[in-house]
Image 1: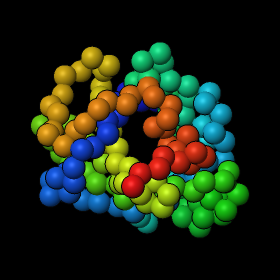
Image 2: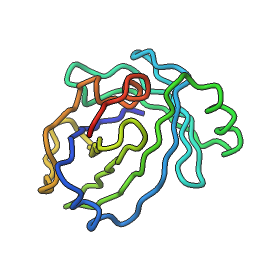
Image 3: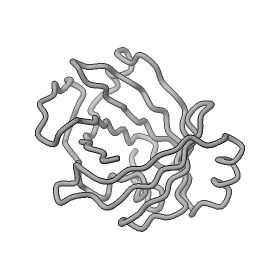
Image 4: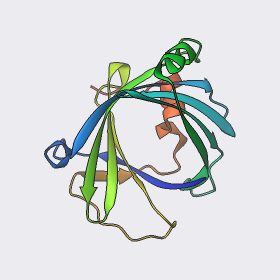
Length: 155
């Protein structure tokens, strides 16, 4: 139940040609307190409720608990979420021995694209594709819970 993850901005759409699949995601937050965010997500035909704890100092590691729920329940929960529902398309890219999840945001966040990689340990070595840009791990501005409330404007 511990998540180890690093986040990066994406510099081009070259990842799309490498993607093995993509899925539309709608998500909202029942609670955006940084010590315990509660997220509801509809990912394709599946739905999940997730609780995340506060990140460690580097921002790479935090508690995460997730359960699949019925899609109709998720839609009802999204209707009572805090303001700022996120819509994005997630691309899955296998690069080296790791899976990158690249989120291309829509709406007022159109133009924002973030890649995430989950690791088994904080100092794990991984290959970085050419389209990977600046690392934003641990920067709260790039947490989805922050994006949902504040947005990140791109042109």
